[in-house]
Image 1 (cartoon, rainbow, N blue to C red):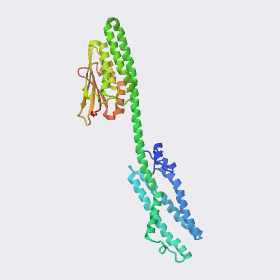
Image 2: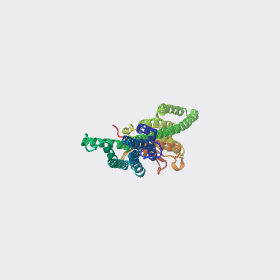
Image 3: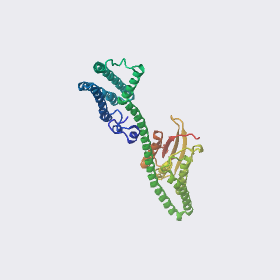
Image 4: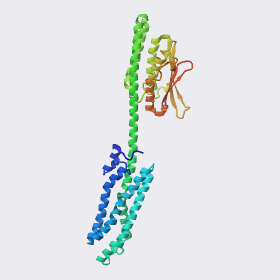
Length: 402
């Protein structure tokens, strides 16, 4: 799932590292984790083995016996603390997914621990117990005052708890806790990345809008300047249409960038005011039709996207053609795909793809915005019309009205 030789992300460590810190910065049952754990647990378990041997040697006043006990008790105590984690580390490096193999490895480590304990008991009965019986005649495990089945089960339960702690049981719980927090961290990173990509797409679209608006304003004002003497009435109508357009668009341009929610009706209003200005400017050689069912107008639609397609159709289509031109904006629901989609088309009768630069930065920015918002469910396609012009089609997921 993630690199085993690199430290875990800080947010995962904060929740999953536990009280020891240090070596827990690395994934549980990784090689760096195992080295760090061994550096802590091997001295502890080795010291417990020496303590056990020292107590026996001092109690029986026999240093030689104490060293003999140390020779087997220290390795057995070391096996208690390392057998399960070592096997679990090997399993995690060799198997994907590793949850079942790692769990089985810890279980096998517990079996090894109980086998070591059984060997220690055999040696104690054979070597140590006779020495105690020589000092204390009649002493024996079987005739002790509390040698009951309950006591034996209590001792076994204590041993099992100790083996679980030393042998990797706690580490196994940390392993599953780490998996859980890694998934949460990964989801948060993906969400942050998606938000960042959306913000970048919105910023690029804002830059495109900043480039298009001055071009549109300068051309419109130049047209008004030339019409003042030739056709004052038309110049006045152009100014009125421009004022209406700015009244509609300027407040929206301030709020739409970075805003995740907008409706198709709001975007159509911007397009309608813009096309009205172009109609007054260009006169009878230009016309437009907006054919959208009222039921679809309240459907969510990305801001600034539709006006960019309309401006692109004017600039690269209508203005580059010599004859009259028309722009049509249509919307419909496509139910033929696996998931229903809202399909919005901007159709122009202009110069066509071959004669334009219609695959420039603006359309790439629109595609980036669709990917950031909808992933593979959003798309922009361009298609030449047989009779001339271009069809720009945007597809977004359809959301039925409540």
